[in-house]
Amino acid sequence: MAQRAIERADEGDFEGVKITSFFLLEIVMCNLNLLCLKVRQLLRVLRRPFDRQDEAEEAGFSQRPPLWAREVRVSCSS
Image (tube, rainbow, N blue to C red; front, side):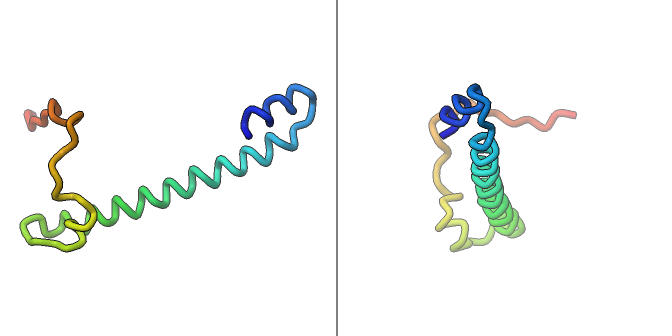
C-alpha cells in the first residue's frame, strides 16, 4: 500500500499518500493504545509485588525471561 502511494506520488497523485498516512497513523495509535494498556496492567501488578496475582499470571509476567535477556544486567551504582 505504501509502495503504491509512493509510485502514485511520483506521478503527481498525492491522494494515496494522504490515505496511507492516515492508515499508518491509525495503526500507530492502535499500537500505542495497546502498549498503554500493557503498561497500566504492569503498574497494577507492581503495586503488590509479593502477592500472587491472577492478572500477572495470565499476562505471563511470572514466566522465565526470554533467552535474549539472559545477558541483561542491572546495577544501581550512583
